[in-house]
Length: 347
Image 1 (cartoon, rainbow, N blue to C red):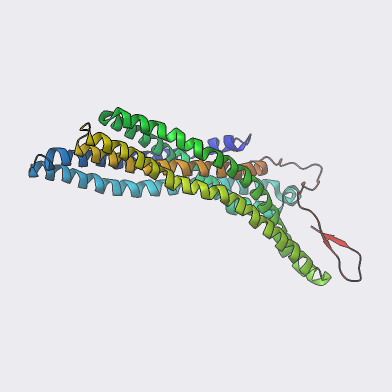
Image 2 (image 1 turned 30 degrees about the vertical axis):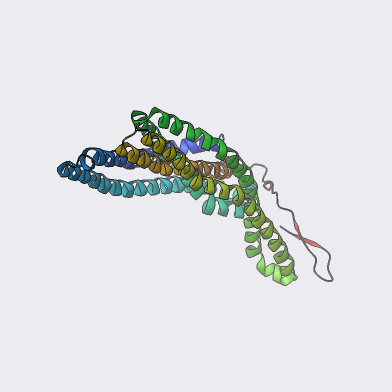
């Protein structure tokens, strides 16, 4: 187990589930290849069958399109199943590591880390880490599909191939700063989330005592205040995330429009046949899917790094605790003043 950093931990985890990663990458690649191959078949049906008025040839190419379409549907199902199993395998393996280490800490656990932090890791972080494994499956398949489509376009029009090859770096330059902002905001959000969950566990554990002291309303007011602060921090995370979603859905469509406009001009001058124009449109429309997947894989890996940082911090806690000291806490103590008594502290 490599706990020298969040990125190293994700790399180590990816190697532990490399079988599922390979399966997801294989089915994802085959699915994308079936999508990329369909426009070529349609172009052949148009140029060799429709334009030349040869019904037999047209029916043959149409049958090939049907076969590839059915195969694409089956490959899409297998891709989804394998990627779901990959995410679950990574998440459950991480949860097993956390639970095993918590068991080793034993009675020292409450002195080393708050119960709220353990709950947040087990409920939220492990599944976020599982989603980060997308980059090894469909992320790899999307990159391969992009390269294949660029090669196919180069056989049709070198100009269009250059535009497609240059398009992805431009998209990444636009989305990259947003991913960085998401990581920074996500780190702060995750800190506040752990603190608030710790506060909730404390309230549930000491509710009877708080009732007896008359401090329930004071503690409730502090929890509401911290919950509102967490909500506001969540809005800060949601801001760049919403832009990433907008760019992930919108920029590939703009990219599609540019390439189709260029292809239409080439077809008008006779440099492209009608079938080739249809193929170019199909290739570029198909590229919307892998480009969108690559953008969201980047978002998943950023959130995975944030979650892995907390998991790594927990797994680094030494089993031996000779000092017996309490774990450092970022939480501020809550002051409860009961009428007619001196102030008391509740954690």
